[in-house]
Amino acid sequence: MKTTKIYDSGHQWYVFARDPEKVEGIIDTNQYMVKAGSRAILLDPGGIEVFAAMLTAVLHHARVDEITDLFASHQDPDIISSLGLWEQALPDATLHTPWLWESFLRHFGSKNIKIKPIADEGGTIELGEVKLQFIPAHYLHASGNFHVYDPQARILMSGDVGAALEAPDAPMFVDDFEEHIDKMKMFHQRWMPSNRAKQDWIQRVRQLNIDIMAPQHGRLFKGEDVQRFLDWFEALPVGNAIA
Image (tube, rainbow, N blue to C red; front, side):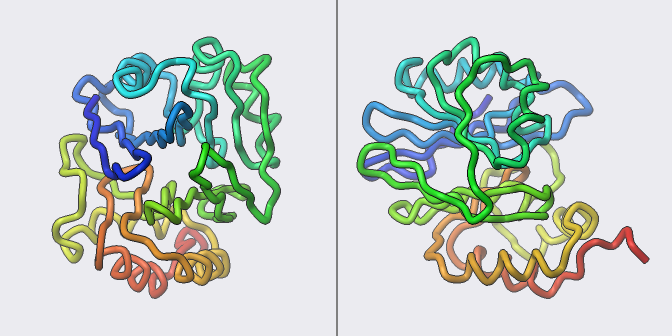
């Protein structure tokens, strides 16, 4: 699994992705870690099929005892079906997840992990001097859903918003936005069910200073491509399975 450091100034952001040994037929995913001093949080740490590769990659950058927290943006298996294994590896960790999915996530082999449910309006987590914000993204595409914003690094981990379906050896960052649209359009129109929820999210996110938008699938957006994405998504009709 490839590791890319996308921020390093006082604390670090890592993305773990582009696994050449990924099982064929399973969508490629981006997993993230934020490390601040002696604490780290794993963001959408992935499905059960990538657990071994993820654990190996993560331990190059943080000790087991430093990984104090996990975050699951929603209940999908590609995000958190590895929970039971992380619980065994990190018995003292706390999972932050929408309150709506707390009992559902226990189905992924979890028995004892401490869960700190996130209220609908969002919240924060402090890792030393770093404060991360849980930004509501309900119905995009899960009915209980959050993104993670780091105001110091100006990074928004945006879950399925911004996701693209493409080859697992794709570059880490978007290099031609217009060309990239074809890889995003169907995903957003089919998986995002609510234009009203989309506009609510866009209104929230436009108030943030974002240098990098980091989705769970495909390439990351940086610089002017962040605003290009927001403009494109704002104009895109979604929920197209309903005639």
